[in-house]
Image (cartoon, rainbow, N blue to C red; front, side):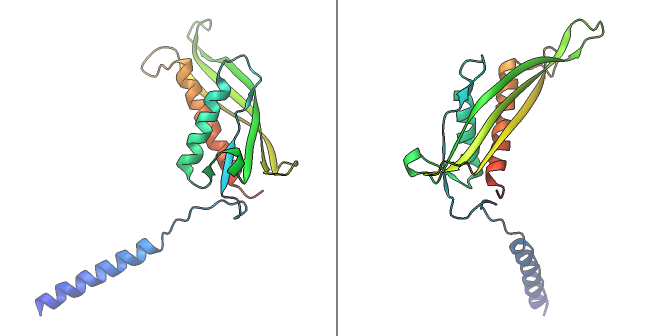
Length: 170
């Protein structure tokens, strides 16, 4: 009798666990059109004085789309949609000052881009947006970062936002 009770309890526990897990399904799909499965990411035009920023943004975008997995990144000849744009701002500005209010302790780095997505073979964009992200960084102390590290973080956040916009219903 005791063996049957243990077996029944195990079935109940296993059954409840299976029901809970199956109720928490996750589907990978775009909130946009279901016929769009592939994307090409053009190298953005760089209208700033920050050399190589367009290459870094292109790499960050490709990586973020690949990690996201909703749209496959392909070359232009195989793509359903084309993502393109221009980087229009790269600004480093003082964010906080020290006690004497003359020495900068923290900077804010802001990157802004105009981005558009269009279907292959169509002139009119599906959407056009201006996207801006920033990162702050301390110059000294335990939280100190370099401008390069802040730039990498700002580009990562910018890429995440562009991926998110691309997957929203248009």
